[in-house]
Image (tube, rainbow, N blue to C red; front, top):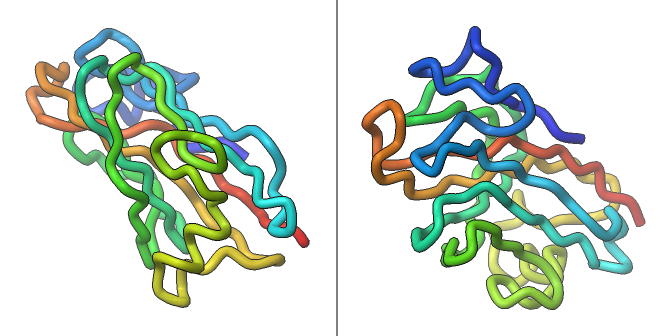
Length: 158
């Protein structure tokens, strides 16, 4: 379930985008989407962030909770609780993915969570996690050096 879009009333410097994260220096908002399933057994969920500035870096995080939209740099932060960070990756093409079969996190997100995160970050059947992508936004509209995508909630099943 996507959430944490950037409406005009919440945009930090008039860089609103009601269908993605707040507008970045490339003139777009970053949109985080999921494909595959939320099945822990299949472990085939892939998270893709599009609308990123090219030639930069990004990092998708996973949190155990949410927060009301809070201005952070050029965007809005909505993921909270215990935060777990996936490895940073290049935004060379403006779109990047993590999950099974991707170059950034090639194993499934479930397998990665159990091998790399503390117990609070292990993805198991019945767990719910919230994802958001942080990225470098040089020349961003608010003068800050980074921005965020919208956020995505995933309720994991068996």
